Image (cartoon, rainbow, N blue to C red; front, side, top):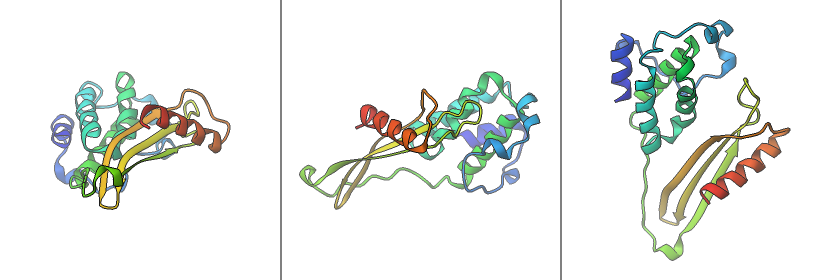
Length: 177
């Protein structure tokens, strides 16, 4: 599992992990020097991040954004990436009981497809691009089944949060809906 792999390769112990409420760290919470210095886990980061990506795809969409951010940084791993990975691993360790749950208790004619979509506005400090997120469910009075989810960086810079939301709606309807 990702936590064990991280602990083995980083030389840390399980007792070194601290509870965190979210899987990610904002850029403004990191020192600018952290982005310039090479990270300690640069040589083995891809092994850990790819295991986390596998977990995110199958059972943990809540960590998808953070894992994608780390996966994009594997070729230029920095001290900031080390800090982000530690936070992700801590979050995964303390939320190991969080899993996807689906239940079906209705005939199909009582169910509808429900698509939730959202966007960040200029969330990436390096290029000011927004991020699209979406979740598709089959829902009924006694049914809730997650069918798909997506997290994707938008291709252009939005000029307002409304524009970012409209782009997110279009993308999730096209890809999942």
